[in-house]
Structure formats: C-alpha cells, structure tokens
Length: 245
Image (cartoon, rainbow, N blue to C red; front, side, top):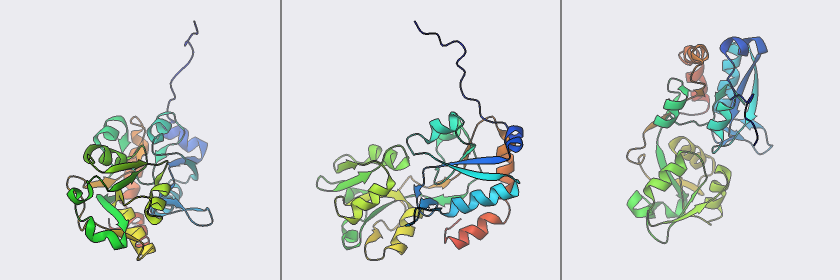
C-alpha cells in the first residue's frame, strides 16, 4: 500500500514571499473578451490584462500571466499555480466561501447572445427554452451553471471553451449562447449584423460583479489589491475599454 506521508497540500505564497520573488502571477482562462483574450495575432490583451499590468506596477513587481481554464481555475489557484485569478471571475457564494474576493471590479449579469436576424425570436428565457432551440455552453463557469439550472427543454450543445461557443453562433450550429453583459456588448459592437444581444435586460436573478480571486489566508495581498482598486486605474482603463463600472 502506498504511503501519503510527506505529501503536503500546496500552500499559497504569502505577501512577503510574493514581494521577495519580485513577481506577481496572474491566472487567466484567456477566452473572455473584453477582459482577457487572445487577439487575431495570438497576443493576450484586454481590460484585465491592462489592469494586471497596472497592479503589478503599483506593487513594484513583474507580472507573469499563467493560462488556466474555467473548469480548473479554482483548483489551479488552490494549487498555488498563480497568486490572483482574473479575466472574468464572477463573485459567487461558493467562491466567496473558498477564496478571498476583491472589491467589485465591474458590474455584470447574464444575457442571451444570438444571430442578429433571430433577435426577435429570443427576447426572454421562456422564448429560448423550447425543444427546437440549440443552446451552446462551455464547462466550468457561471454560464454552465445558468444553463444547467434554467434550461429544461432546449437542446444543450456542450463545447470545450468560450471561443467555441461564439463560433457556434457565428456558423449557426447553435442558436443561443448565454454569457455576461460585458462580453455580449463587446461582441455586438465588434461584429455588427452578426452577433446581437437578444434580451433587452439582464436575465432575472443574475446581477453580479466581476472580481479578482486570491488565497483566503493572504489578507495582505487582498488589502493591497483593494487599495489599488480604489485608485484611478480602474476608472481610466474601464473608459478605455468601454466597460461600465
């Protein structure tokens, strides 16, 4: 029988250890525009990428981005693969119980994204949740949680990531993608006539905030992040990326 003696769970770096390392590690899934995504040249960009650089400069640390995924984001943070999770993290009771969450970064809520010529068909959840409607969703995030809880009759098309979700709407292999207002507004403006927000308001019960997520015990890092969030950087960069605070 194998022994587990000597195997210790990962312990997150303390604030002092982070400062001594000279590096702030930022974990991101990297598939959530306009917060953190890869542009057509494959370069990592977005509001949270700029925010991470601003934060690291304020803390006098070098920034290093660590790619993660929505299904593994919490486990990766708990395994000390990075110090802060960013790039579209929604505040939830489960995350709040397990991790330290920053002050609100931007407000948000769920909407339905579809092809622009189908907007009138999908104005509400009732109109969407019908047997012939195809709802596309990726695993591990709040979009999946919303679909699993609310979709009872529509066909659910499960895919690997958020990029594939959007492509499913573009190529019409799916009809609806539930996502956040931030992302819906972004793609509606970037791909006019192709991607459109169907629901006029955020879906009931989905009002939320995007936050940054850290180890529960690292109060000094949390305090440093919240102090920085209270400054001017967030407002300046939100305006640059056309994001409502």
